[in-house]
Length: 619
Image (cartoon, rainbow, N blue to C red):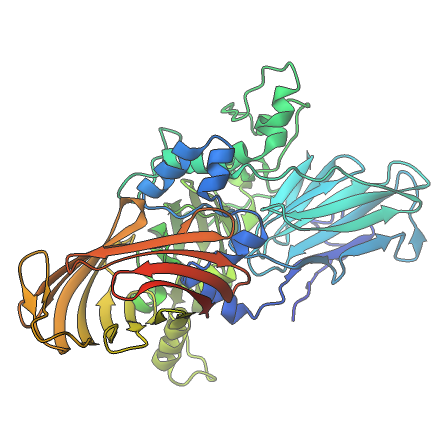
């Protein structure tokens, strides 16, 4: 359930702006639709399932890298232990404006629209995780408000609206007999929705070109250090003035540039924000926060005490853990704030994703160089490597939520709670218990399982995980006593920001019928002469460059086993490879072709069970 709540000014309001606040108003709410259950999407994200990338043609496989001459870029990406980049993690089946894919607006408030008429669109992003590019076929758009707060009018060609962010824009009907497209396009450019304004023949705006994923991957490789931290390469970025996704937009730096004899550089570092994102086809003005200016003085009381807080936004794409200062909500207490204090919050984004940070209960000043006229907002979109500062007077008691408004980031832990004063809520008699419930909600366990029904046996795995802990079981079941069967179970805890290291305890149970004089000898000369073996172990798993997992395990009987393994090597859009080799002289190689998000065909060779082919099911 979603909707827009709009408060209009009275005509006698001292802040009433003639020619803006008296314009005919149209509420616009943007949303997405997926045929999947959002709980299932959340689980798939945590399990690094790339079905969404397949649907979006964004797998960035080795075959695609070779075809585009980007093999080195792909290898570098995996050498730094990064999965394929994604601008937006979720694939949506439909994008909607006011609940429809396409809508015609021919009249407003009973008045038929004609040339010269102006309309105020009050736009809200009601989506769960999508950013939208907004453009208008009738020319410039004039931004007059953001997050319900007035700003000095600023003309732009396009703007990107973050999740839960709002903008009020004024558009003009240029000509009679024509209807102009207002187009909302997801940031990953897979889906759009149209709103036609005016009467007559539809005038379309050209669709945005597809993203150049390998160009973006190359940029990401340059930004990422081997330890997982970001390197801003000496560029001090803030307020969306430099969009690091800019190299992925062909209309700015790609094919369009090659076709024009134009010297404009795609990543303009000019301090004039109106020069930002200029391209070879002329100056495309893209809104950024540095352009926003309040019509009013927004300064806070000078005699109030100031509490400075710094947050680093942290994340782990491989396991889909999103945090602040490398802690999820379940690992933190509320942040105590005295009523009347000014909170000045500096936020640095040290993750590869942009985050729309939202504050409940207050509007905040965005410190963007406009001095006394700093704009007021309650959402601030922070891009990778950006540092932004906001401030507000904490003059209302309560426990106020501060969180990333991308649903799946919020549910993964990127949240904090400001406890302003000693607020007593009669509907929450046990505040501590309620806070624990909120903490659990952002660290819910998730389950995955897969099984291969093959001609040479049955093998699979199941895992139950949350942000830090993992309980996993693998099995290999042969069809005869010589092939035997084995079940390995590990309970471990991931350590560090990037979670490349997991110490664990394990239990291994295996049976294989060996001949009278037969025994198993490993690389270190240690022997196993029993048909049935039950062993407890201690070990660690570490993610090496190229996303290869190294596992070292010592069993209670002194036997040592070292392993190297990797699953889901993206060979082509739907073909995945994998391998395993260990010091017990066991090895395996596999290929899997993905048909649907739950079904594939897998063929593999196993040193114990030989060659097999079968149906692979996963959940």
